[in-house]
Image 1 (cartoon, chains in turn red, green):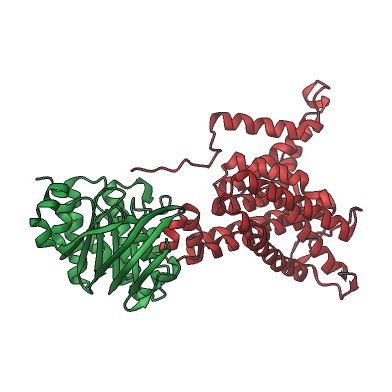
Image 2 (spheres, rainbow over the protein chains, first blue to last red; image 1 turned 30 degrees about the vertical axis):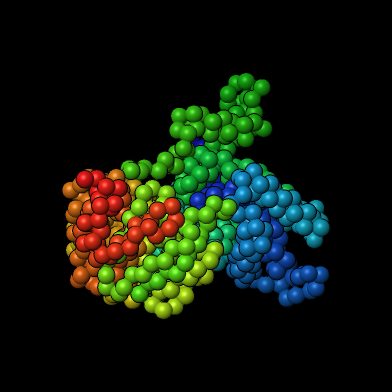
Length: 318
Length: 235
């Protein structure tokens, strides 16, 4: 029981990161109909940027190492600008082209970011520190150690991941639900001609969509990096799970992306733990197949609900 | 208020308008009639800026707008209620109306106009939280008009508001269009297939045929005209 809870907690933490990257993918897909295969590599690239800042070397020069949270914040700014520029410079020229063209362009971005990162920082994995401790009224957040929650413990880092991920999701929800710009972005995603007739500058909304999505991805990258070591291919596994999470939840549903991510995180951990011979009595199945098992579940879900758990076919009466 | 002079427009290589000239005086309702494919919708798209004319000019309140972007033309006071309504189908009624007022920052004015829209179309008030795509056809048309009004336009472009609606609903909507014109002093350019209704509420009418203005007269005269009667009124 204790082990089970422990695995569920860890699963929720990694699942939050899958959810965040899935959210980034869904945000772009919903607002621009583009599936961004470079999402993971963009997140990796921005995580390197954060590492540079608090490691104290910036473009080959020595700089004063920045505090973790300052570097974190600057990285979010950097990621947003990068996302916005990518939309303007790379995506806009191919806007409205066949979907395959755009897919190839984002695959190109994938390769470019991977190569740029290897070229700038080398392929040797680097340790990325978890967020440092913060003390608020006697309770320690972040840092090393673990929080005792009765039947099990949860490491501060896992807790950090969940808290930050949930914070980002709430902020995004509030942005889309309650601000005029958020509303305009949703409108643009649904009907760009009508949006123009309302005076919405559709191009700006798309740029903003990419900026937001790069920002969310950057958070995901910085949260997962302490667990997987910082290196150019670090987001490959995450990206795969994130895509699976987005499809599972429904490509057009932000809450679906989050739920899909959490589900996959938990399933991944449980399969990784309970598929040894000790538990299932056979030796031909094992934790190595956890990705396969997770994807199998998705296939089953999609057979029953092709739109994903939360995706909906547009209800329309004419 | 609105003047088109010798407007040519094309979709790629296909010429849709061959020199359209028309005028909409301030405060009036002008209707644009004609068969399918004559260029009625194209004319509205040229005015709202969704399509730029290949030659000719469009002036709104004395100002050239034929090279301006659609996003900018709304801010001048021209609002288009497009063909097939083009609602934000997955947003609620309230959200659709709020987006209609996207260019405005005067909270109180927006609130007043929202009340006004609910006054014209009480059903929208009852369905505020409902997703637009689930409304009936008539309600969707009402929402499209309401959304158009939320920009507080001086010129409203209506594209086939009767399309696909039951005669009773159409009549109700036309009465409201008339009162929007009279009470709120909104000038209206109305594109319609239903010629008899359009001629009944408008003062001046143009008949468009294959991208050219074939007839231009007061609605009273058009109603009496033999050609219009036979082609569009069916008696």
